[in-house]
Structures are given as C-alpha cells and as structure tokens.
Length: 144
Image 1 (tube, rainbow, N blue to C red):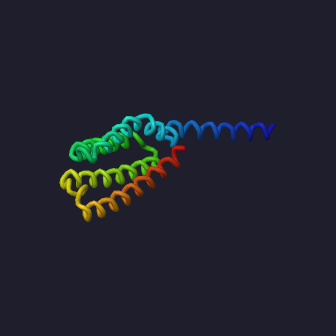
Image 2: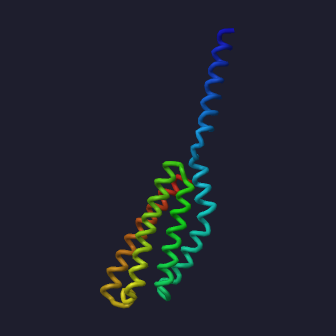
Image 3: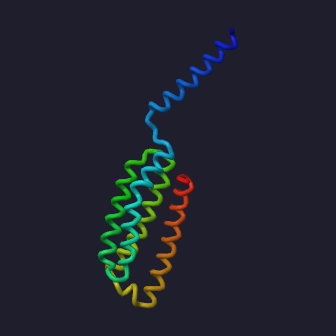
C-alpha cells in the first residue's frame, strides 16, 4: 500500500510539473521553427526575386532587400524560444549586412564594372554570403 501511495505522489508530481510548464506559455523549438518555416517561405521567395534584380536594377533590389529585412525582423518578434530567437536574430543581422552591400552597388553602380572595385566587392559579398550561410545552417540545425 505504501508503494502505491509513493507511486501516486510521483505521478501527481510529474503531472503537475508538466501542467505548469504548459501553462508557462514558453514556445518550444518546434513551434518557433514552425513559425519561421511557415511564414518565412514568402520572405525567401521575395529575397530570391530581388537577388535576380541586382545586376539590372541595383536600386530596386536594395529597396526590396531592405523591405525583406523588415519582414524578417517582424517575423522574429513572433519567435519567443530563446535558442531559435538567437539563431534567427543572427541570420537577420547577417542578412542586413548582405543587404547593405547591395545598397552600396545602388549608390555606386561602377562597382559592377570597375575591375578593382568589382574584385573588392566580390570578396565582401563572398564573406557576407559565407556568414549568412553559417547563420542559416545554425538555424537549420535547430529546426531540423
């Protein structure tokens, strides 16, 4: 009888702990990733379209990328899980850096045609793309 009562206390304690954690409203990694995956699809599509415009219309591409950055920041406000938020915010910061590079081209289109400027710009873009990829991989690792 005593063992049954200890078992009942243990089960009640576990049920209470699970119930309280559910009431705390904390966002799980899976829920945070679902928000990003669901709402991020349009953002990714818009970003890919803007990248296609960089060479032909860098000003329009820069404007679109800045808008996308704002959308990413807004989406980040819906993520409350600390680990996913940290990874998402890192990705957004990297994206902002990349967007600023494209904005540089909008301000000085000769970057694409002047050999010295193009070489320097290419290095910066590669470094930025590498960082962006690393941040994206960190988020993917959490959201697999």
